Image (cartoon, rainbow over all chains, first blue to last red; front, side):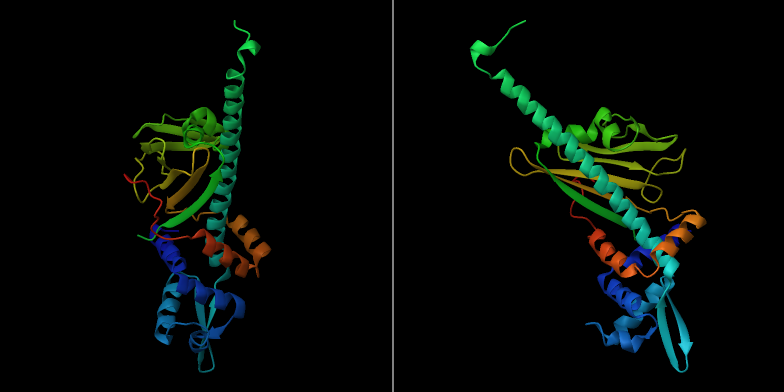
Length: 127
Length: 154
């Protein structure tokens, strides 16, 4: 896959309006641009633009049914995209969790040491 | 440029200096990041991260203790990492009181979508029909395109 194709993919997904269109296509399958326009808050023209971008990125394809053009999600491409992001996010969640445990343990240890250093004079055993 | 941006954060019950040491000292990094970490936290320093019998080069970008640490990785061997051929990992630390730190991490760049075909197919088979859930996840992951968490000098 080329860097340019990646670029198209990420910019296609990054826009919230386009994610809304994708969401509708995922849940309702083959539907027309007019149907989509009836289910979003933006214009029919905007829907067409978003569909063109999604199609260019390979996330959506169209087919003709009678006089209508129906749009559907390209399963493999969407899986690929969502997986890359979910994997990366999960990895970082795991790493941040480990950092949190390490730092909190180190801090607790430092506090315990500090506590024993400031113990009453009589409790100290030098050397 | 249309980059992939992943941003995550965690609240840690420890002072910012402790968190800083945890994310920048090689001995600590090997406990949360790679199996083998050869790295000096100095701007421009070249290092290595080993994962099992694999691994790759890392180049430190920003070191601004105790608030910002960043490095580039996942660039092709033998090349200098720059925007476009690597992923930039950036940590920002924000103290919240004396004993609490918000740690944020972002990873941005051209994510590599090259999975083996068999793995792709298995994944597609397993998850067919579950996209709605993934889209929700996606919306949460893709916080924003241009991060407000970037290091000042980055």
